[in-house]
Image (tube, rainbow, N blue to C red; front, side):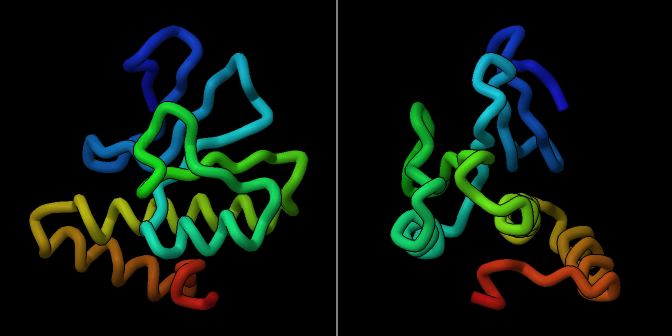
Length: 114
């Protein structure tokens, strides 16, 4: 994690790519990366999920903690992390190794089970 933008915007990265962002001045929400079609589906399904403000809304959602069950937030954090693994981790051998570890641990991607 790091504060690359300012002293209150905390980002979480995997292999240098952001998968989550928290603004410490707005602790009621988290910004998460998402597959584009799934992002739209989530916004239609849940009142507490919107296109992320100041981020590319095609790939990023705001999740409001007080409007969502914690299981949904945790599920979407996993989805964000796995999206970055699938799209950004190189070399491919490392990507496949990470995905194998996730599969062996029984962790399912939210998009795959929706």
